[in-house]
Length: 207
Ligand SMILES: C[S@@+](CC[C@H](N)C(=O)[O-])C[C@H]1O[C@@H](n2cnc3c(N)ncnc32)[C@H](O)[C@@H]1O
Image (cartoon, rainbow, N blue to C red; front, side, top):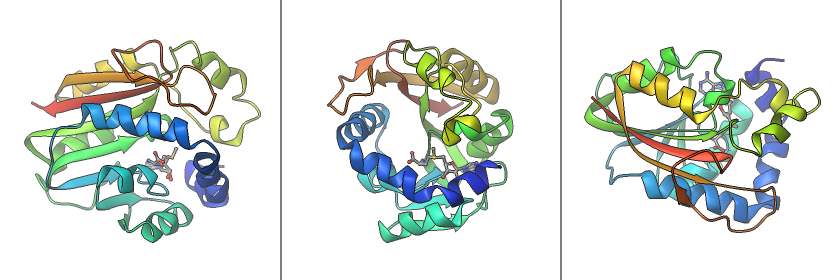
């Protein structure tokens, strides 16, 4: 099953997980908030069901799965069908591009980071939220990878790998936060750095 089919088939289950774990969601949103500079023209690539976009004030998303996009539209987000590898926007259209837990569905990061960079104005920011597979909880994802439909399709990466790819793509990382140290639905502390929390938020400036 492709990532596209996966999210079309399981959009309800995906969105329900956040309904059942609102404090984990809030912890992740807070981590992203803490790395996000002020912005005026923002896009979320792989906006999914729009929970992060609506919480963070991102009005516009790109999303390949129609079933996921339908949720985001109900949350007031304008969604354009598309993929991160070929963003349907002119160069320098945005001062902030967000991409939250999408990198683990991308076989290659470089083409998508290059597109994000292209649509950002000079000095604009790419803000990433991702599963840090190098964190202790990463083992749980790897152990479940054969059975869990969401993990089966995933290309998990550690934050160190993502940092290297960002540098290579022409970004300078300015802020890093981490959170989520267990799967308990509670407000997890947001800390500087990476390696402990399984959710990492990074802000990278276009050089
Ligand atoms: C784990 S969900 C994250 C959704 C949303 N960003 C969130 O944090 O709730 C991954 C999303 O990435 C989308 N996706 C998969 N491949 C993509 C690609 N090549 N370009 C853009 N989005 C993609 C999926 O359809 C799905 O909505």
